[in-house]
Length: 277
Image (tube, rainbow, N blue to C red):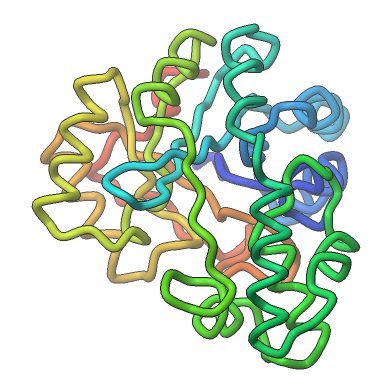
């Protein structure tokens, strides 16, 4: 059985390892097929592809696009993309715009909550200045000793309604799926169990996504709990979606499940990679 991981991040977005280092880390853990899916950015794909080839891993070019749907931030993964596609590259550039201003506002809110210097502190964790994210602020807050770990930071400071949360308007679902399909790729809803949607709203998201040409949802992911794996396997089958799998790796020790420990997809779903090899 192939060990396939189709959701990982590097320093190009909010990971802590460079693309080649993520490839090496995944390879050591036994990954056979690997995708780099940085947030709203594809500039790490070439280095990731070269590193994977050198290690004998099959590589899948990917991206994770931030969208706003029903007032919530949702992530859409694109797999098997042409990372040089002009419409995709231009769309991602527009999506990245505004992150710096948002970061400065987050820092201002955190200062009012008793955490000064957060912008400069977060910037030290940023590999790509165009992609400052809440995760970079979370790492700084952990370093300061205000929280023990990143999930605690999000619970106390960076989720909606908390002192450091600043909303941002991302791309639309139609934008993201259109860019991915236009680049020859397959669109996947990332970690659907993470969003705070009612069953009705989630169903509406799935319906719209399918109508736009989306083909898969993540079933086994480091962002799901174990009891969500069978739930989203069932939903994948109910909606006629293919199933994807990935750790959502950002850094050693930060993920709920590391590469070597992520379980396989349930046997009764159709993997998104079923006809790739």
